[in-house]
Image (tube, rainbow, N blue to C red; front, side):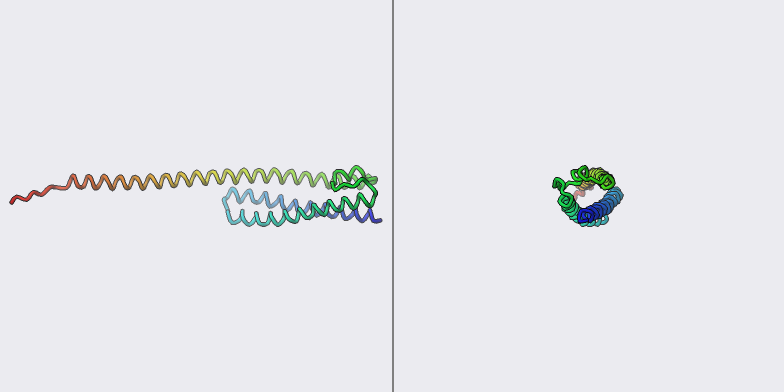
Length: 171
């Protein structure tokens, strides 16, 4: 009976982990739109929420590992903290299939999250590069405008002094 409740707890933890990683994936996907729209405040807000969610996910991962160990001990299996190593050791076929399905879903979400995070990183890098180029172009154009104004001022003062009629005093 202890092993059954350990397995139920393990199922509960993995399902909680699936919920949290799904939330994290949604946040990462939402962030893409904010990156593209260059909405800095929203990106910062999502980053904060992602960090909080990552802490939850990490805690759930540790809890899952502890429950895997509990199941191993309760069923007198080779002790492991990895769900993937536990599954083939389980005697109950339904339990193996159920946990294998949850694990597969979990791995799929982690893969999707990894791809989405990579894309977000690339988008942020491109956005920063474009911003840097625009800044350089703007400052270069501004510097040219200032230089041009100084040149014109210089030429005007020169041309004004050379075209000023001379008054000769005939005395």
